[in-house]
Image (cartoon, rainbow, N blue to C red; front, side, top):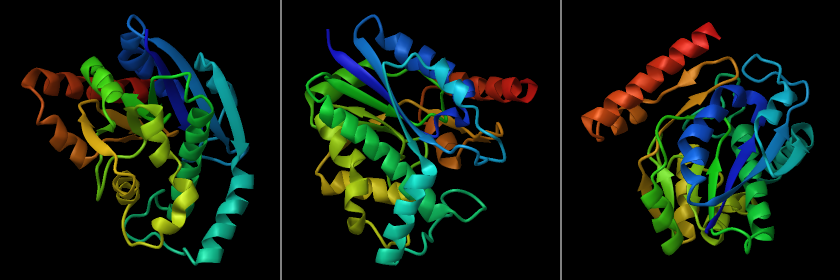
Length: 269
């Protein structure tokens, strides 16, 4: 039986209470009859900082039946990020304000890269323990079931599967799966920030650069997600809507129904 590790990273309690059941139903439950599955969590602890105007409840992490968990304080990381930005004069991240209206685009970009880097370190330490790794942002409400054929293909090839949910100027960041040895190369891009900054492009561009620089083959996953913020705002991009239209009519309707039901649930929660 192949061994899979499902990896969550970032500010875990931001919206995990709204998203984890979708991960369980559409990923973990789909895998459990055919694979042995562990869960790894890296939590970037924001302490008393408000996210999307909401105070985090770290008890929400207990909703995840994890096998491994690591934490790191964001205020400590931010000192390191500030030093990197000042040393290399990375003052702006101008194509899109990654991080919203507060203008913390460059900082949020580095925070996510660091969080994925920690997943990469975990996979390096456990590279002989798992055949496949799935990496997922904790804010992602998974809209349809993972494709088991893609899981098998990711094991047999030097590639990673990436969803087309929000490609921007590159490849959608935050959800990928493949062999750990392949994923690690891109997950650890925090170590090589000089290769990607400064640049006037979006974060998806940086992720694509890391894939290209490491000669990784990108495959298109047909899995979709909706990003949910702590204040229950749903991010459902124009790209996401266009991508759905490439599916069959039945799947198109299924995903739109999922989206509408999610809106209703969050409104009444």
